[in-house]
Image (cartoon, rainbow, N blue to C red):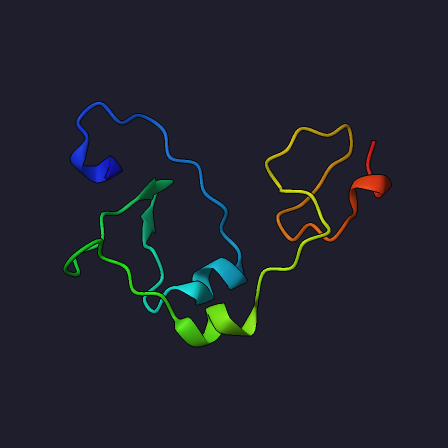
Length: 83
């Protein structure tokens, strides 16, 4: 949607080897800019084997929550372990 919106300004993302593996063709970047996919539809295809091999499990906090402690995108800490 962002690529189709002329007034879209900032795209935030998390880029790790896991996030790259979730899609069949990795997203492409150039000088800090995400390049629009050229495949049909949304331009991305999920790798269902990777998705199914990593089921959601609760217990940690979301990486976007505000905390006094640094929490990386692979957050494995419990709420009780954070400030």
